[in-house]
Amino acid sequence: MFFGRDKWDPILIITQIIALQCIYYTMLGIMLFISSIITDTWFEMDLFFEYTTMDFTTSIGIAIIISLITASIIEAIVIRMLIERAKKCLDFTFTLHFIQFVIVLIYSSFPVTFTWWIVTLISLGIMTLLSEYLCMKYEMTDIKLNTSNIYKI
Image (cartoon, rainbow, N blue to C red; front, side):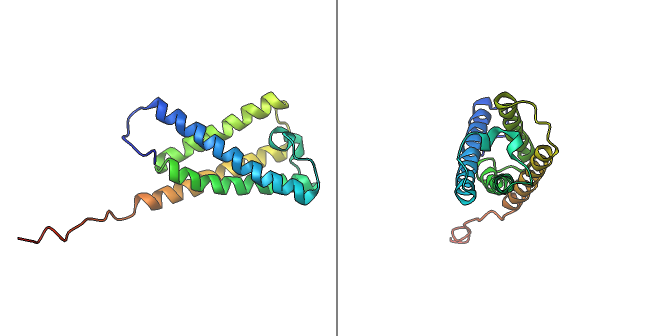
């Protein structure tokens, strides 16, 4: 979709980052909404950006962790469709998680819980490795050539 020349195009890069962020938060919002219904908790912004809600001791904390991992898997597929280059996957994945970190920093404070850092690093790893794998698989597909007209005289 956004595949193009390998030259510096800041408008394309910014557009891709915005698209990835929007899709990520949409998918995460759907997952967290379902989780809040299942765990009978309020659906609020704290589920997205409050690092203290992410823990293994409460049902909503576990649901948030599962939602983040699931959203990372879905986002890896989206990266394959939007970015289409394996060498750019780490950059876009890190940018997405860095923006998430900045928003958490502004919304609550510096995340000091071990769980938040571990889940974020696992999410980063899953998204990076899966998107790189999917992009490499896509890049290695054969190019179909129409050879039916070559041999006609």
